[in-house]
Amino acid sequence: MSSRRSRSRQSGESMITDTQMADLISKLQQLIPNHMTKSSKISASKVLQETCNYIRSLQREVDDLSEKLSELLESTDNNSAQAAIIKSLIM
Amino acid sequence: MSPSQQPSSPNPTHLKIRFARRFLRALNNLNITKTSPDDDDDGENRVYRRSRRVKIAAYTAMASVVGSRRAWSRAVLWKVRNRSRNRSLLSVRPRRKRVDCKITNNDHDHAKVFVRRRNPNPKRDPFRDSGQVLKLRKLVPGAETMDSWCLMDETADYIKCLAAQVEVMKTLVDLYTTT
Image 1 (cartoon, each protein chain N blue to C red):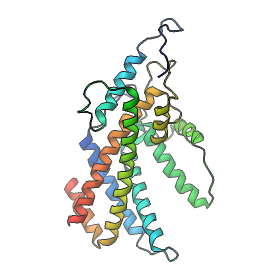
Image 2: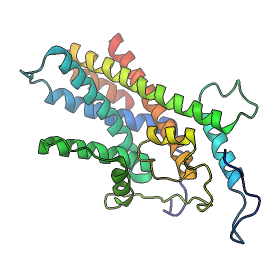
Image 3: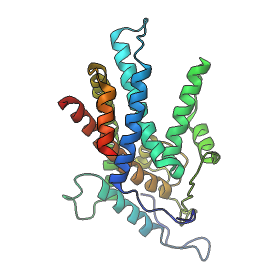
């Protein structure tokens, strides 16, 4: 992390950037899985790294699931009936 | 909810329901249109193109549920719209990402609900280009030109919606395999 200045250049500028960033990073930390095991503070760079890995794994899962879905849609014949059933369940 | 307020984070169940509806509708449309076989496609290519269409339908459905509130959803919708436009013109033009993001941020015309999130301290941004942040910028759509604060905000929302999307898709796969 780059060095943090203790004085702000312009007067009247708020000095709470770091705490706000820490808030956001803790919010991110709650979203990524396995955050329970690391309930103590972990470094921001680790949180960012875990976030990147998590996003990549989610995107990979979307790819896999869309492949499976396309195969399943191809194989079943009464798709519209099933989709109508599912829709009626949800709505 | 006035536009100047920051909206609360989306209720995940509502998100899933709305996403599921749009996704199913899109899948239905996909099914109706692709029953005509492509003669010049071999099997593998066809499978790949089909799964790609499903994936695009999923991302588009989620982005349209979120609407114009978020930069990532605007970026996704813009990309999809331009991809279909490019294909219809039959030209392959390499688009630079920076140009995309600039135009996306100015695309207010279609925004029904457009909430601008204010970075409370935009002038000080020491983490803007540090290593991990760069990787994050590549992963989150539309995040290349944001400052770090907005980037973290967008990332959190993006992760929530992506996780909800994955759950709904898993449920759908289970439903289709058992019935």
